[in-house]
Each structure stands twice: as C-alpha cells, then as structure tokens.
Picture: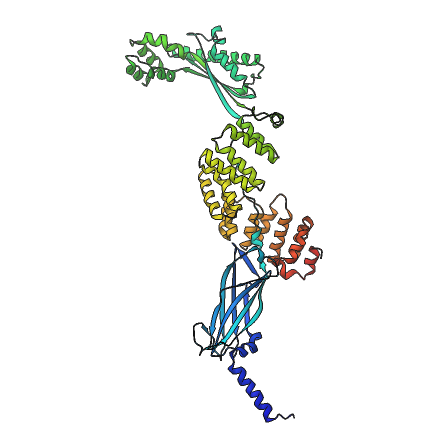
Length: 571
C-alpha cells in the first residue's frame, strides 16, 4: 500500500478548499457537465426573423453560493459576432438580481428570443456559442467560459421565394362588336320595296356599314310592322309579307356586295304586326291637343280593333294618319358583327413603317402576341400616344418592365399613369409588385388592397407577401386553390405539410431544377432518404451548381455522410 505524507494530504485539502471557495474555479471544473440544449439545434429563418431557445442545466456543487454569472448566446458568422440577450444567474448568497442557482442542488436556466436575419448569416459556418461570464459577488474577479457550438448553422429555405407575381394586363383587344340599324318604309297595305327606298339614304348607309373593313357579319335581324290603322287580321298577313320581302331584298343587296349573306342561320325574321309601342312613342313626342286622350286609348286593355275605332273618332286623326302612320309601316333592319383586328403578320408588316394606322385594339393585340420585349414596349408607348388619358397603356408598359426585371422603369411608367390618367386603383396591382420586389411589403399589401377594389385578382400576389413575412397560414388561404407552383409548394413545406408540398410540385406541367431541389428538401424533412436522393439527383442533373449548394445546405445536414446523398450530388 502506498503511503502519503502529511504534507501531501494537506496540499490536496488546501486545493480542494481553494476550488470549493472559488466560483471561477468551480465553473471551470464542472463546465463539461453543464448541459445546454438548443431548440432547434439548427436555426431557421422565418419572415426575416430567427427564433432560438436554449435550456441549460447546472449540476450540483458547480455554482458557488456567492457567484454571479452572465450567460450570453453569441452568434459567429463570416468573421462577425452578434451578442444576443443574456440572462443573469446568482448564487444563494450573492448580491444583485438574477435567477438563483443553489449550490447544493444546482439549477437550470432558459434563454429564448429572436434576432434579425442578414444575408451574410447564410451557410453552414454560422454557429452559436454560449458564453458564461462568472464573477465572485462583490469583487472584480471574473472569467469567461464557453459552451461551444450549442447551435449549428441556419436553414434559409424560406428565403427562396420566387418573383412570380401575377402582373395585370389591362384592356380588351377582342374584336369590337358593332351594330347598325336602319328602317325601310312601305306604303299603306303594300309590302313591295319601292325604288325610292331601295336607292334611299337608309339603304346606302346599310351598304356602307356592311362594307366596313374587316367586318364579319354575325347576325341580321329584320323586324316588320304594320301601322295600327287597319284590321288586325289583314295587318298580320301584311307584316308577314313585308318580312319576306325585306329578307329577299337584303340577301340580294348583300350578295351584290360580295358578302355571303344567304345563310339562313344569320337571319332572325319577326313579323311583329301592329306597332302600338311605336305609336305611343310618337304620340308622347307630339303636341296634339287630345294627346292625353290618345294615350289613354293606346294604353287601354281594349282589343286592337276597338282601339283603332276609338283613335279614328278623335279630332286629331287626320294629323295622326298623315304624320304618324307612315312611320309605323316599316321593316327595321339591324346588322350585327365584329370588326376583326388585322392579323399579327399584317400588323408586324405595318409596324415596320409606323404604328399610325393601328387602332388601339390592334396595339393591345400586337403587344400581347409579340414575344419581344422591345416590340411590346413600342406598342404600348404608341397606345399611350393615342390615349394619354387612359391608364391602360401605362399599366401594361409597367407590366412589361416588371417581367423584364427592370423595376425602375416599371415604377416610372406606373407613376406616369397616375400623373396623366389619375390615381386609378387598376394601376395598383402592378405597383404592388414593384413595391414588393423592392422590399416594401407594407406598401405592396396596401396597393393590392386597392387593386382588389377594382375587381383585380390579387390573392396570389398577397400570398407571396404573407409567405415572405412568415405568415404561412395566410399565405395558403390567400393563394387561389388552383394555383400550383414553387411558391405554393414552399408555403406548404414551411407550414409543415410536406406531402402537400410534394403534391404542389408534382402538379406542375414542367419542373425546374429548383422545383426538384425543393422536393428533395420535403423528402429530407420527412426522413425519406431514397426519395430525397432521387429528387436531388434530378435537381443536380438540371443545374450542376446545386450540388455545391446541397453540400452546404443545413436542410441536408443529417444526410451529408450518407452514401445516397453523396451519390445524388456526384461526390
């Protein structure tokens, strides 16, 4: 058996007493036994904020009764440090404030909070230490110890929102609907069309309208009437004959003009018999002495033949017969059609010279059909020149610049619209997109609200703002149910619905490398290593740079050493 000298025993005892009486030495001795658990272990940014929670447990005898300590989470990233809010601890006999940790039993502490994310925090080299500064109460004797890397890295998937807002394109470039009506008049009890009518001004105007450039006739309505001054039975037969006569006249007329007008489906013929409604309108507009009595008869519930007898008994009848009845013996001919735009090819040829010959509808159509940004810009600028007080040209020009990523020009075009066409709610959808992509979510949301009042669908655009803000439930409820893209998949993923995220990706017609990458993240969060690797492999196949991204992405931290992961990124 080994023997110890008295001096050695006294030395050991003194050392134990020294450590036991020294708060700094105590912490140093028990530092490895102090437990710190971070939740989450890997930090994650949501709405530009990063939340953290630390729970610590100090073992018995590790914290001196006269010790005071400041426990501070410290972030380290790209050579920078950020001290977060600390917590103060104190022993039972220590002065000051703080959470008491008993010497005999030990104790626990909790730290939680948030900090603002900045882009230089991205990557896997960011970590969080826990600094413990311990002092002896009432003295300046202090020392700082570290629990290293209590949290590792930061997940930045929420920052991958795509600029896929829906811009609003205003204006209707569909062919313009046109109608034109003229009347052909008949002699009393006759249905044949007189030469004076056939060559008269009304027929000439019908011919002129029918020959409107690019007019496509879609309907011809013929309503034939008789004046209410004959026997009803005879007038019924008369209006039928007038209808047939007018129909034949119009088919012959349009045929001579080279217009295919003999299609029965184009025509709607109606024999409307005696025109008592037209008679009422003429009387209302007249200055007849017995006007009131005449209207009373017309509006009565008598038979038409009895009404006729009563009208003929009035003193005004000769005037009515001479000035009103001839206007009621007629066929009203109405032509309906659309004026078609020139074809895109025709407009492209015309544009080589100038846009002067373009109608406003043709400008909208040409801009819409063109694949060229420059052509779209030129066409909308031509529209503005023709209609400077209309918001449409400014709005659409702004949309072109947004799609091209030129936010400064987009904002200028939209602000010109407000200046020249008024502060129109319809300009606010595209203005909201500019605000959002410039980082002003508050202004963007206010603009979308105004656009909604104008009847413009802004739900998807609002959902992007909610997604960026970290309001995932609002993002999900705002987006149209039928919408299916990267951002809707990202919303589902960040709200914890991994299967929904995968479904939102799979329902797209074509998938990009970023879609496959997000799908890999969804499977990684589910713990499905095979599907994760399959999706990641497709992502890397489409975009080789994603291999390096995945190798540093904390989403895949727990898979980095797996063979499936390494094979997927060709490492």
